[in-house]
Image 1 (cartoon, rainbow, N blue to C red):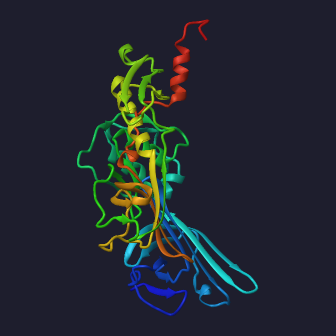
Image 2 (image 1 turned 180 degrees about the vertical axis):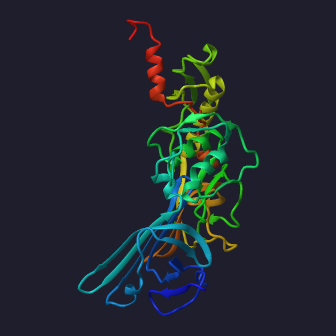
Length: 387
């Protein structure tokens, strides 16, 4: 049976979204609601999960009464015919006044469960606190399975085997997945079907760019040198008493940022036990330099369409050419986050972009046990009177 569409402003009927590429529809319980006056849907490579917020206001009772949904219901949000979010209704907020009625609905993608819920449980109770000795995708898939969420690893190389480690009681599913993803140099974010994507920094380019005087309405940039340093010294101050002595203590990795004109040294000290020794120290120094360079330049753009010249929605983790002579920007940067907006200002997309280096995952070491146990073991090994 085809879904019935209720347009809450007007009387259009249809199915599977809207033929209008600039209309948002929400399908809930076999009914599709369109005609929203205030719309915002947000996705990003560092935003977990995706979310949406829509509002309809009318002066007299009418179609708002037809919008009847319940928090927790499954929903699909589309922009035109394109699915943009698959998840659940978080809030349904109707209100009335002397001269107007309003309905507001907000929700998040399916990956909300990974962010909200504790790891180590399924519908039958605790599942055990140990994970590891498998690939990153396998761990993510096992943790996401109780919530019906599929994990897609877009990287051909499965990466390193994750060593066995213990789940910290109360830790959320996504906290573990994010740590494992960083161990494998991957980003972790939600796709439009509500599933989890593991990916490297994007190399796909949009069909068109963002250009001053063409499709950019407003733009603001931020260039900073305050968080960059000329020299990065990474040290592993080990608390792992089981580690080889050669891999602990004052081990240094050194990286230089030649773009910093002044002498500005800094030290990167890890809070974890450093089983990785010099390798992880050097990787972290390299990451600090690249990330701080990337984050030192950013632009936020409001453009006049949700889509590029090919009709494809602006998508996180996509490379986009940017030309804004007035801001001295002529570069190709990554979409970090995009919000699809409709309101009094019309239909616009708000995009945050930075160089690809800004999104490189932080190198991580998977611990066999958490830092509190490590600290206790270290204290226990001290000679009497040393404490």
